Image 1 (cartoon, rainbow, N blue to C red):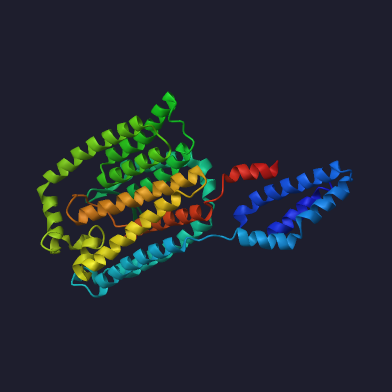
Image 2 (tube, one colour):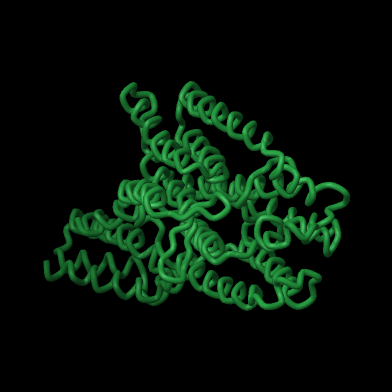
Length: 415
């Protein structure tokens, strides 16, 4: 055993030169396997154990040189294109808040520090984004059921303690108000990805249980009565089911139930003439903004304001940023080796896609939905922080897209 410590010392010396700690476990496994193979070959050739160990170390090469080479091979990879897209979208949002506060005809914003508050939210969001980029997302896998239960608890807490403001439930703690229904789609995407990444949809009992796991949070969201969150979660759940190889009849069952409910709710909303009139004031006659809607222009109607103030070209640029961002996330997800990472990234992309489409349709008067913020642009601390954290998780998956399960690697290195 004392002789084998030479291998451990050598491997430790190699890993010291590899800055990307995520690959240390796999490098240790590979080097240890290679060294023991060389040792056994030498001992079969008639060498003593000590001689075989020394020869194995000589054959594999100098630790400093090998460590430097492996460091170059396994350098930390950052998706700079995605970061630039997010920064561009955030810059657009911050620019709009600046104009609203200092150069806008809407005088009710002059005494509200929406620009400075937005700046703080974006800066904190960037810190959280890069913090999650450094975090190994694979460690969340074993907490999937815990996150699912927390998601259900969040929904129940919203129903019990939430206060409705313009139809939206907020949980108020001291001077801080949180829209808990904004948190649910992100938590649900991460938890369902962990639950379903090895789910056997072909088993009859598992199939029914899987549909029930998806249906339970959807029923709670419907009970709360916040339609945008229902749509976003439905799209995300169907996407996760599809990626996890759910059967067609299972997807159709969930889709049919969701569509029937949404049709009923949308029909009821379109019957509400007062709200529909407000929507048309924004979306007809060349985006004429009326005083009755001023208080929402920095949140629900941010795209309308961009087109109204900066022109259609600015609006198209904003839309293209979202299209490219969402496409890139879906495209990158295909190259992720670990099924869990692939499903988390796809689920989060579905949340962003659904949220963006709902905001666009609402701003163009195609859907009468209140409380739909445009990702990265609309004013609001909770959704900005959540979205930046989601991007951080996506960047973490991109960084480790060629890696397998961290716990299998660790178990192998221990054994």
